[in-house]
Image 1 (cartoon, one colour):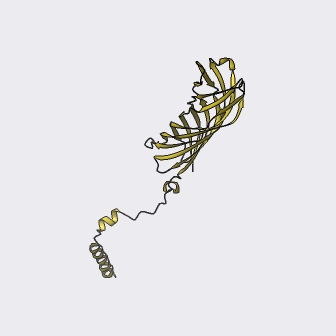
Image 2 (image 1 turned 120 degrees about the vertical axis):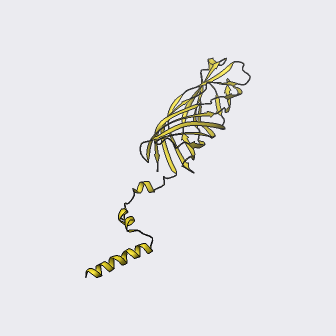
Image 3 (image 1 turned 60 degrees about the vertical axis):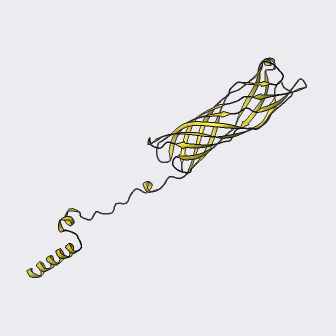
Length: 229
């Protein structure tokens, strides 16, 4: 029996040598058990992301009524909710559609100051930006963006004017902000946008038709929550 065991051991050793495996290596590297990885680490993040922000709208008080020297305009600042949707083409490149609406009062200043409140308009400025996200800082993810805005003016009403019509218009948009991700889905966001928005308008005052330009050029300053699907 001892001879049989000795022959078997010698045969096994010879087989390992032929296979290129030394007995010492086999003893040093025992087979490791399979350990399943966390499923979350295997899943690529969704390309879709949404945000909800509180948005402050700060306008540039400037503009004029044609034919009236020294005329100027001012506009009320507002705070409104904002919702946006982002799609990530890569982890660094994304497109964002920004949706919000707010109202603004238009007041005459300068030479037309006695008019007081000329009227009120509601503003819907959907804005599409292309963004670059910096991902090398872990949970802190700053980004910059630029894009195009199309602003719709609706529910226009008059104050001291007999009639007011602010025309819809296109404008450029610049953006900078950051997300701080609390986990793989939720984060907090801070965002600043500058819209270059100067619509033409028509107004009737005391039966006289006038035209001008409202140089709104608002700053949009927002803070809120981010959710990555």
